[in-house]
Amino acid sequence: MAVQPPLIALKGARLGFGGRPLFEGLDLALARGERAALVGRNGSGKSTLLKVLAGLVELDRGGRSLQAGTRIGYLPQAPALPAEESLLDYVAGGLSQDDPAGRALAEAALDRLSLDGAARLGTLSGGEGRRAALARALVTEPDLLLLDEPTNHLDLPTIAWLEGELARFRGALLVISHDRTFLANLSNRTLWLDRGKAHRLDKGFAAFEAWADEIREAEARDLARLGKSIEREEHWLHRGVTARRKRNMGRLARLKDLRANRASLLKAQTGQVAMAAAQAGSSGKLVIEAAHLGKAYSQPDGTVRPILRDFSTRILRGDRIGVVGRNGAGKTTLINLLLGRLDPDSGSLRLGTNLEIAIFDQRRQSLDPEKTLWQTLAPDGGDSLMVGGRQRHVVAYLRDFLFEESQVKQPVKALSGGEANRLLLARLLARPSNLLVLDEPTNDLDMDTLDLLEEVLSDYQGTLILVSHDRDFLDRLCTSVILLDGAGGAGEYPGGFSDAVRQAGGLPDARPGAQIGSGAPAKTAKPKPSSKPKSSAGGKLSYKEQRELDGLPTRIAALETEIARLQTALADPELYGRDPEGFRKASDALATTSEDLASAEERWLELEHKREVLAAGPA
Image (tube, rainbow, N blue to C red):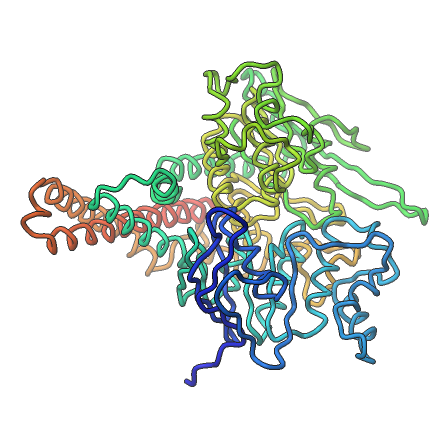
């Protein structure tokens, strides 16, 4: 197969804004058909690199080459949306002024995204503004598409639509996103911007974590051999190697048990007119009990729009409930109903005793922009705060949330959107609570912060209600997911997001041929016949899966034995001096075997959980 020439390339690129350069000696090339994920921690220069490629920022050194005639579409992380400009004028502004068909193309792009071209930009919601900026980037039918956090503030049906559009895109694509599922579904290349260097993997993002760990572990071994101590580098290397949730079998096992308990509870509730109120005698165990809740709002045209119809649930201490639906489907209304902040039109609600509720405000209105980070966490003065029943120094606690010591005396207004979210989460999680409500906590967060937040929430002993469009985040945290169809229907399913969609037969709003965000009533999705267990006595794994499950304990034991042997060999202090090559091979083998063990353990948990769910039958 012929190799495609690059549409755009950087050679020996260097850029800095005083002090340490963001990147130096960077080489990068993108060819037609490549859909590359650009990853790296906050501050690594990802957004700046996209601006360089878009021709908006000049390099200090090095070259940028663009194939003649290449059209570039660029979506910035925070698009400038002139409040008084019409949507149509804004989208058409992405086209050449001498293009006679420009407005027709803009109208077609807006129609595909179900946006009103006459609307003023200042009246749009965050999600609508994002869709408008996407329309402006896509209307030119570019050869090279550069997208910076395109899924921010988008609902899941729109994200699914965008995935489909980009999967059909035949040009070159470079995308920055914190949405792991979006990147894994879309990319066929991965570029990792790490400490000023660009690493390239000729595979999609799904292979990134294992590949990145191999690089970090190799660097950590090199540092150890050379006896170097580079505090900043080792901090990130340490986080990268040790903060891998997939290896934390304790958390995975606990989530599996919680999901099994939640599935049993939901199954027991099926078909019951009255909830099991008698069990409320266990003080503190019952958190929320809702029976047949209904809520509707009158529309300006006199019609009544149902938000929720006949919804019942019973949430116990320790449950982690995800809430999913398109923008405007009623997620916030449902939360307010469940918390007793909004009266239902019908049905009843009972809250448990001694509830301490903490709520994440995604608009960050509770942060004073003039106060420093220190003052935000310690408003009464002093240098410490109580976190989880123990005293923590403000600086040490901020380090846990990936802030540098030099930032603690800066005002909140100097923070980026992601940093402000981190600070808000730090303050929220420091407060005593036993019911945590998080409304879109993942917006503007990078993957390091998402990993950190996931670890904190995994260890949280209270009850969690989570509204999110991040599928991977929901899959890793939730014991059940409530799917809203936007027309009053709501169904709760045990497991994470993927489990819920499988059981529901698809995302309720994701109807073939539907116009995203049209506001048309959605039909509740019916389970597909193929999604039901084929066995009449419950369900069971396939023959191949059962054989794999049966063989995994033996494989895990063999891997553990091999790891112990390698660790014993590497413990010999004279091995490196006596046999450097043997030391290197043993080190590499230990890293590979440890990775194999982690994968085997995770696969065993996955298959065992699937076996139990199938055996129990549909909830």
